[in-house]
Amino acid sequence: MKGRKYDTVIFDLDGTLLNTLEDLKNSTCYALKKHNMPERSLEEVRMFVGNGVRKLMERAVEAGTNEEKFEQIFKDFKEHYLIHCNDNTKPYDNIMELLDRLKKEGYKLAIVSNKYQKATAELAQMYFKEYISVAIGESEKIRKKPAPDTVIEAMKRLDSPVERCVYVGDSDVDINTAYNSHIPCISCEWGFRDRDFLKKNNANTIITNPLQIIDLLDSGTEIPLIKKAKEAS
Image 1 (cartoon, one colour):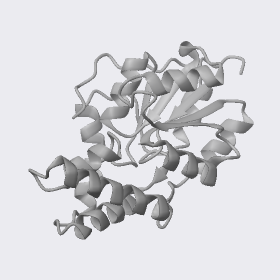
Image 2 (cartoon, rainbow, N blue to C red; image 1 turned 180 degrees about the horizontal axis):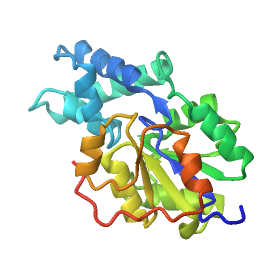
Image 3 (cartoon, one colour; image 1 turned 90 degrees about the vertical axis):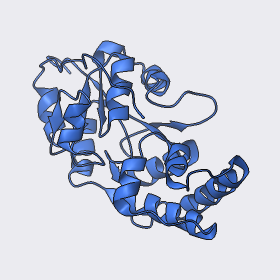
Image 4 (tube, rainbow, N blue to C red; image 1 turned 90 degrees about the horizontal axis):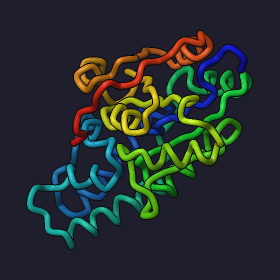
């Protein structure tokens, strides 16, 4: 790792490593339909994700849904998604090559996600077990992103100091997470948010292809910190 500024890469999962959108949409629509609510389109679900599946379903249900009914809808969503989370999900183009190269070059790798822990661990094991051993999702024990807690926990497990870490994600939540964690953020525009959205939310390092991450890291140059963050909705 001589000459490199960073040796640890912490990845978001949905919209960054994996295209999970179709399966999220299908489970959302399953739960809504079961309770006689209008189904949601792929583009609607795209804009609902990022703050965890509970917030996804809060945005998806009809306005005025009472708490008891919501909890049943949310339960049905989670049960369906655990069974069907891999029906259409797959890594984005060049992700597996990226991880292979990073691993061979000695980088330490982790996943932090707002997807609940059981699904995060299952998908990480299914797709990335050869490359990523630390995968932290949403749970009652730790605050979810954009709080820095999951990133700090990943750094602790990898024994990585903050100044050696970078974060890779696709949303405003990820930008804010990196800001709160005091580490640089590499924003990817192949995920659930486009370049204009990322720029409006203060992204300062945007890439179009996963393999650009190798170039950035191997160059040894400093990736700028986010100067400020916007409040994630």
